[in-house]
Amino acid sequence: MVIKYFIYTALKPYQDIFEILENLMRMEKIMDTNSEYWNFYNDKIPNWFYKMVTMMGLSVFLGFLLILAGSI
Image 1 (tube, one colour):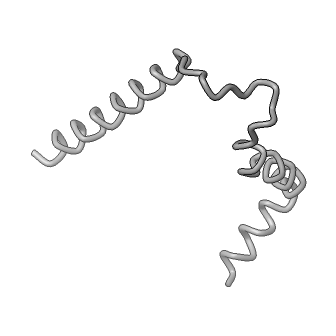
Image 2 (cartoon, one colour):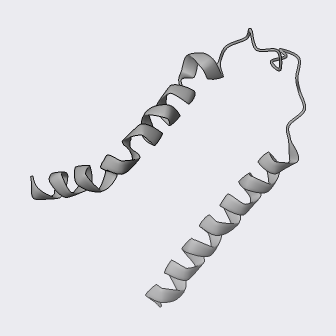
């Protein structure tokens, strides 16, 4: 109960920002096919996606490696 109160009080100044982000991230807007940038035949995957997946895999691998090294 006390922790819930502190979390609510800490996030109160950011409530407007969270509401704006919530309205921006509605799934209907993301999946909307009426957008001018949406193309059904768009097969090109941006390079940042490959970099992100590679870096996530590397960080998970290093995390497991550190856990393994710490358990020895």
